[in-house]
Amino acid sequence: MKKQVNFLVPFVQLLVICGLLFIFGNLMQTMPKQISGNGNLGVVSILALVILFPFSVYVCVRLLIQLRIRPRGLSLLGVGAVLDLCFGYLYQLQSYSNYKEFVKEQVISSGRTSDEMYIDSITSGFSSYMNSQFFNVNTFIMFGSSVLVASVLIVWISRRIVCTEVNEEGF
Image 1 (cartoon, one colour):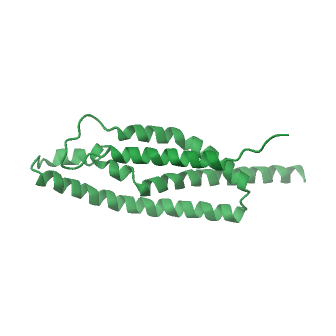
Image 2 (spheres, one colour):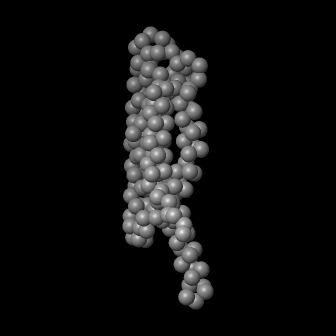
Image 3 (cartoon, one colour):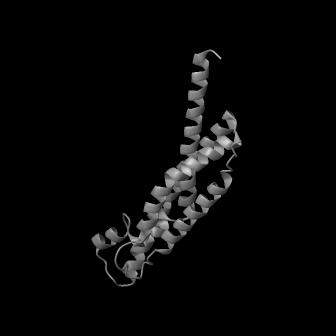
C-alpha cells in the first residue's frame, strides 16, 4: 500500500526558505549616505528565488490537489491571487518612485555628489541602494501570489484535460 505524502510540510519549508531569502536580500541594502562597495549580493537571492520558483509551484500544485479544492474555490483563489499581484504591483511602482526620490535627496544632502547621471545609476536596476524595494513584505507576498496563480492554472488546466478525456471515452 502506497503511503500518501503530506505536502503541507514541504510547502511551509519552501515558504520559510523564500522568506529568509527575501530577508537576506533586504539586508544587503546600502543606505543612501553610505558607499556601496563592490556589487550587489542581493542578486544571489534573486537567483535562488528563480531556482526555487518551479519547486514552489510543484509543491503548491500537489498541495492543492491533495486538499481537493472545488473548481469554484480554485477560481476564487486564482482571482484573489491575480488581484493581489495587480494591487501589489501598483503599490510597488509608487513605493519605488518615492524611495528613488528619497535616495536622490539623501545623496545630494550628504554632499557626495549632485551628478544626475550618477544618482540615476544608483537608483535604477539592481543597485544595492534599491534592495529594500525588491525584497520587502509586498514583494514576498507578490512572489507567493505568482506561485499560487501558476499552481491554480496548472491544477485547473489538468482538471479540464482529465474531464475532456473522460467525456471523449464516453464515460
